[in-house]
Length: 273
Picture 1 (spheres, rainbow, N blue to C red):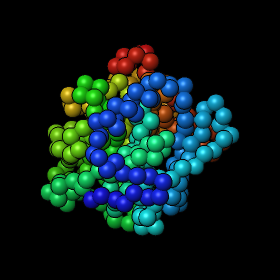
Picture 2 (picture 1 turned 30 degrees about the vertical axis):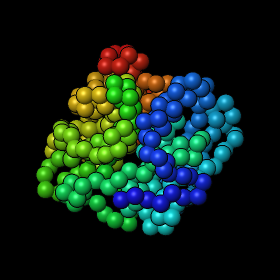
Picture 3 (picture 1 turned 90 degrees about the vertical axis):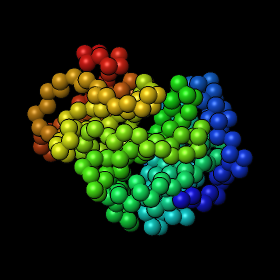
Picture 4 (picture 1 turned 135 degrees about the horizontal axis):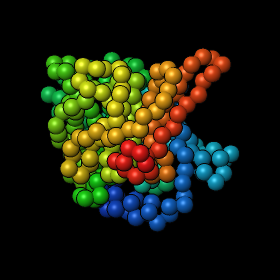
């Protein structure tokens, strides 16, 4: 399925995706000081996204986003960013890669029916908890990749598809060997891998471990996490801070005693770093 480009965004007519990716990567690395925080309004059907410069947090800038025509039927969400490119998911219309700076947008084709039809989804709801997404860059093949994990109706697993911007196509890889909690953030990109909170199969909802998918060899592995002393269960999310993998955990004790723990892995793969 391909969406329609909204006002202010144009789809690349020449299909020159490789140059599209290289130019974005070069520009992003060259202007490393141009750091922005992108804000996504998920509480209502907002046809704009927002950004603020880290050097001037009071300057809020709005810009158009994909899938504006479909906003009345289904919320969309930004699920990843990499080198100036943003990735957005809309439950009915699909996935788009876009750059607010150049206002170019690339709409991904639909996934094959044999995979998509075996997928739990509740149409019309603002957030699809059985679709897990991620977006990052594979430095080995010089390619941007989108990962889409879909909970299977017929098997106790997440089926996994990868979209290559270079090949302009989807392909299926190994099923995810982990369960993913009902409330889970989208993939955090660090060290060439996408990361999620997960658990062993059949231990759904606990989220005791961090696992990663390497975008180079497309293999899964667990990431060691330091022992965080918390008094009560709290939601745990994985993210990136200063280029380093991090874990944020809300440690709710009472309404008068609500705190959080932030763990940053300064050396990737080293538990005590």
